[in-house]
Length: 558
Image 1: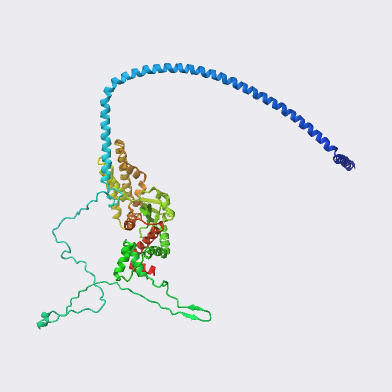
Image 2 (image 1 turned 120 degrees about the vertical axis):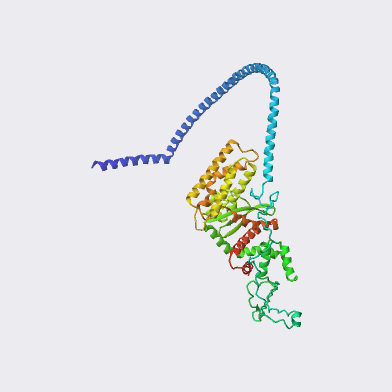
C-alpha cells in the first residue's frame, strides 16, 4: 500500500525540482550563475598559469647561470689538461728521439746482414712469378678442342689429325672380292636409244647378234618453270551495278604469285644450306634463264611465314619435350644488331628439338622454354642455373674429359687427373657396351663409385701437399667441382635412359653456328626467333622417315 504512494510522492518532488530548474533557465538566472562560476574558474586557472610561468622563468635563469658556471670550470680544467698533455708529449718526443737514434744504430748494423737475404728472396720470388706466368701462357697456347670447351675454329693452333691406320701397300679404292657400291639405275624418262652396230659388224657377216644387251644410262637434271594461269570472267549487273567473278584458288591473290616449291627452294637455300639471300636469288635466276628474279624482301619474309604456319607443330614438340623423361639443353652465343645474345636448344634423345633466342643468360634464358616447367632429368654442361630446374641432372662428361686432359698437360706431377680420366673413359665404355635392355649391375656401380671417391681423396692429399699455383687453378677447381657434383657425374650409371654426354645439344647448336657464320649478325630478336623456330622444324622433318624435306616444306608453304 505504501510503495506506490512513496513512488508517486518521489516523482512529484522530482517534477517540482525540474519545473523550478526550468523556470530558472527560462528566466536566464541559471545561465548567469553558470557564467559567474565559469569566470571564477578561468581567473583561478589564469592565476595558476602566471605563477607557473614565473617559476619556469626562474628555473630557466637558474639553469643558464649553472651552465655558465659549468663552462667556466670546464674551460679551466681543459686548459690545465692541455698544459699537462703538452708537457707529457714533449717528454715522450724526447724519449722517442732517443729510441729512434738507438734503433737506427742497430738497423745500420743489421742492414748489411739482411741485404743479401732480401736480394735472394726477391730473385726467388721473381723466378716463381715467371714460372707461374709461363705455366699460364703455356696452358693457354696448348688449349684446343681436345682439352677445353673451345671449338676447333677458336683455337690458336689447329691440330693436324693423324691417320693411325697402317699402310698395306694396296692400291686405293675397291679391293678384289669386295662387292662395292654401284650407282643406282634410274627409270628412263623416254624411250631407250638403241645404238647402231659398229661398221665392222655391218661389213662382216660372220658377226651374229647375241641375247646379251649392255645397258648404260646418262643421268641429267633440268629445271622446268611451271606456270599455271587462272582466268575469271567478270559479270556485271546493270540494275544493281554489282560486278562479280569466280573465286580464285587459295594463295592466288596478286597478279603473280609464287607457289610452295619456289618458296621451299629459296627457304632451304637460305636457312638450311646457309647461302646468302643474294646468292639464292641469283642461283634461281640462273636456273630459269633470268625469268625469275625474286626480291630480297620476299626471301627474307619466308622464314617468318614458315615459322607462322608451323606454330601448331611447334606447340606439339614443346609438349612432347615437357613429357620426355630426359632432355638435353645448352646455350651458345649469338649476335643481334651488334650486341651479344644467346641461342638455347632443348632436345630429347628421340629427336624432339626446339631452339630459342634470349638476350641474357641465367634464369632469363630459361623463361619460356621447356626447361622452366620441366620435371624430368636434364643433361647439360656445368651451368648452375639449370640445377634450379628439373628433378635430376647429368653433367656432360665429354667436357670433364677435356678439362682433365688440360690438367694432365699443365700439372704433369699430379696423378689423380690421369687416374680420373681413365676411370671416366672406362665407365663410359662399360655403359656403351651394354644392350638396350641391359642395366648396369649394382656391384659394378658400387665399384666405380668407390674408385671415384678414392681418386678424389688422392687429389685432396696432392693439393694439400703441393697447393695449386696462383696462375693455374683450373685443376684444383675441377677437383672441387667433381667432389661436389659426384652424383650428377655418375647418374648415367644408375639410369639407363640418361646419356653420359651432352653431345646431342652440342651437335644441334652447330647448325645455328653455321648460319651465324654466314649471316654474321641478325637485325632483331624477332628475326632470330623466327630462324630458331624454322631450324627446330627442319631438324624434326629430317628425322621423319620416307619423307622428302623439299616436298614437306613445299606443302607447308602451299
